[in-house]
Length: 313
Image (tube, rainbow, N blue to C red; front, side, top):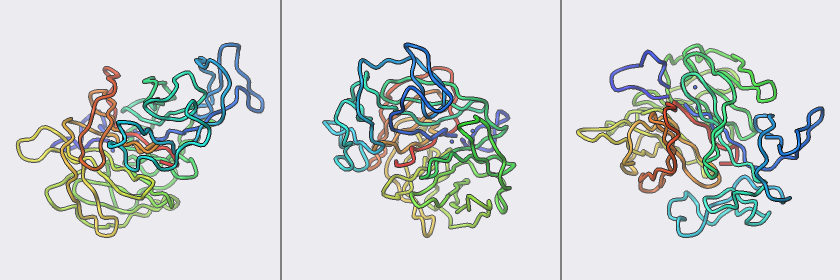
């Protein structure tokens, strides 16, 4: 969820609901126990819904950590590692076969709706409404999706498409970013501070201040190397958000660079790529080393408030 320049907006601007990340990579069959799809459809294993089958033929399972590779590899956190073992036709990547079986989606959200975004096919699917005042969301390595609101910590049950209030966030009233590392440790960003959060008890502890005039624009993200990155609100006369690295032990921030885009309220690490979603409905690909962002697609009037990473990043 975003933290507006000067306070919270009446619409409950959010930092993913501010991301719903999480997007799962992998392939599902067209049937699960007790449910099957009509001819011409397939089961989306993330949302549990039958969707149009755009595949041209059978394929192997898709890996969750495939990197895009190719000339664009310089924009990836760790290009060339964890390549998908199932073959190029089932790799989640910018140059993937769009007719493959690979399910490449992550969660993102607006003030009222949870979405699934496929950043390669450039599609978006509504999942369901979100709790009032949802600030942000992120995915645990075990696949569970969590969200934060002023009321407390929520968990999303994908099978029932329902939100469950777990615990109040004791010790912090208005965080706007949620991110979870590969070991399951949760972190929250709020203005110029970084906190840890226990995803079972909701207990919050201050890590430290970011310094440097950095202030959370709406989200933080942790890649599979456990690097913490944050979108930071513009400083000085700039209108662009900045990408900032955060020290997980002290909270101290270090500038990676200007993104060239404003209102980046959602960050997602998925398939070795860093994505961003904005308050203007844009999907971005962000260079994690320089902060420079390229627009991949414009989803129109959707105001994205947050996003979640894939479990394996």
